[in-house]
Amino acid sequence: MNEYLPWFAGALLLATVGLGYLLVTGLPLGASGLISRLIFWKESVAQDRSAEVMEEAPSDLEKALIAATLAQFGDRAAQMAGAGGQPGADCGEVPVAGTLRRLPLPEIVVFMTAVFAGGLLSSILKGGWSPTWTLGPEFEIYFGTGVRAAGILFLGGVLVGFGTRMAGGCTSGHGLNGCARLQPASLAATATFMAAGVGVSLLLKEVAQ
Amino acid sequence: MGEPKQCPHAGNCALFPLFKYQSLLNIWKLEYCERDYERCTRYQKSLRGEAVPDDMLPNGETISLIRKGNKL
Image (cartoon, rainbow over all chains, first blue to last red):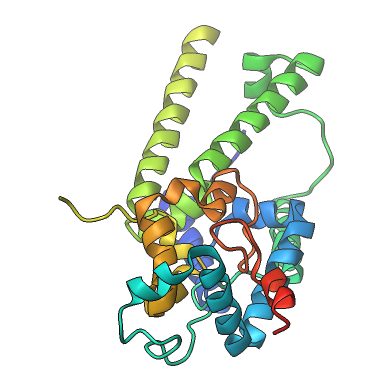
């Protein structure tokens, strides 16, 4: 049987991790977003590169944007800008991608390695660690063993991944950070997956009895 | 008539601040971010869970290509 920390210790630890991550990186923690950036690393590299290009030469960017605007909208752009709307006259410095900081890929690898190492260290300190294929007696009561259990586990993983991408975040992004910042989408997402989790648990318990 | 409905992704968009503060670029905001944000390529890519390059315009063109085309 697993021994869990008292709820308040867990809450304090999670708050420390969430706040620590924010202080170190300047970004809210969201594990699924980090994993997604790692999986689609080629797109992530291209995304980071495009941000660098934009930050390197803001005046070139402004000229390119004005050219693109005129190509797309023609005189309408100038008309809508008004008689006094000279290109660049009202913006001073171009505000480039200032709100879009992303964690660089090497730092994501460090974060993931630290998550794995932390889990391993916790297991070892708890009294030993050994590799196992079983998922515990409770899982076996509900789902059996072997191929059937593996299939159900895989299906569960797919559903979690689907829900996470659909909601734009997981328990860390929505549950820890979004709820702490009272983001309506995070409150709705957390309420939904908590309710679904409790509901399915109760249903499984009924079915197993 | 109510306020124009703004794209829900505007707060995380790299280009939105540019469209907002530069009067000549304001037309992008009016045409895409407010009037019909669902046709914005950036919005559509984001909904599909794809990485959105910072230099991709709402019409799907990239700024770097435009820079090459204009020899900037």
